[in-house]
Length: 163
Image (cartoon, rainbow, N blue to C red; front, side, top):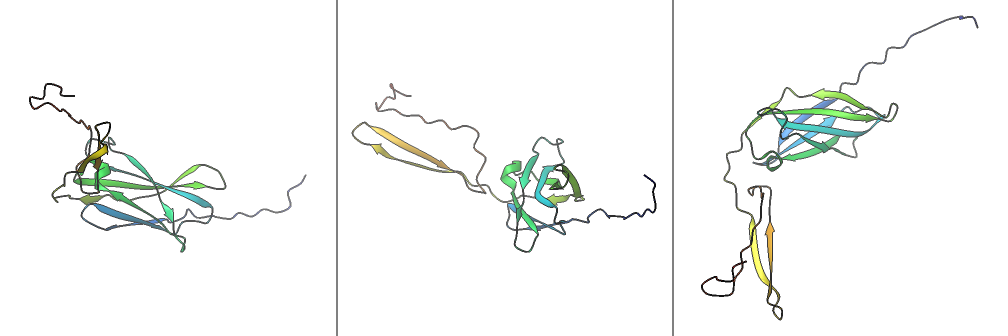
């Protein structure tokens, strides 16, 4: 084989953009635009700079009809820590089937000063014939993070049969 001619084509790296907007006192929305058509999945790792990446969460952005991607992150997922947050954008390429780094934010400073609420607890008779109760504990986006649930139950006035 003898080469007759050659040409080169420069394919520029995509300039994916990430915009962060406050949705509420405890939620922020990340909108990712200018995503190339050969990217079929956007992953957005987010963490607070304090203590390294101990609260690192990988979020999957959802594709909108206009081709942009969005995800909402909740302060609760990061223990309501205030400080400097890092947000990176990665895409999965349909061409190479690998993760491609697109964008990093310069970080955002978030402050969460709102009063946290207690989780909602409800107790109701579950089966009166068997003497059982049902305890439901429900969290919301502003409730404190539940780490342990303990329920004490007794039927004697002196709590001698405490369980």
